[in-house]
Image (cartoon, rainbow over the protein chains, first blue to last red):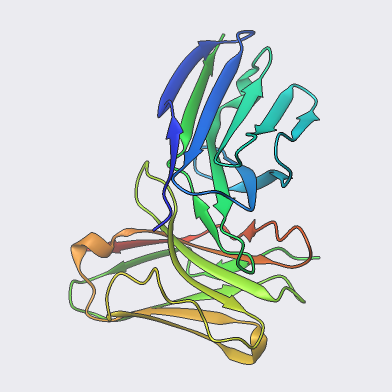
Length: 111
Length: 113
């Protein structure tokens, strides 16, 4: 079945440093979504990418979808303590809206 | 309006007992999902309901797990003869529209002793 891996599993940065998490699928995806889960909370939708090579920005966050639609990345510029949490990518296989969630990257930001 | 709600928020049960977990999705959402998340781990897909279509049960780990969705709204996840490895947070999510972003509930933390 479809597998979605993320690297790194964990990253610890100092506030102001940049952060990137990478998402890789074993199969071609129809779409990819990104979610953020704060400690003790539930996943919250951030964005969806659909087109090959698509790039979207949300303030300090930049999301990319690979040309082959098998990988994606999330880059955070100048991290803040409010960025702490686990970031999950979730890939769609083209069926009605079922997603396969990635393994997640836990981000810790310290002053 | 209200978000996705789940009950109970916490459940402690003895090994071998049956448990029922409830999910109230956002009104009008046609898609409903159940996931399981063990401590510090990712989201494991369990089951997916979409409108009146037959559910996708491909993620259910064993025949001890079952789920219903009544009237296209409320869903109940039932775990029979619970085992210690069933201990986890069970998350429900609902969705609607072309984006099909998933709105998650707060989860039910299940502990099997």
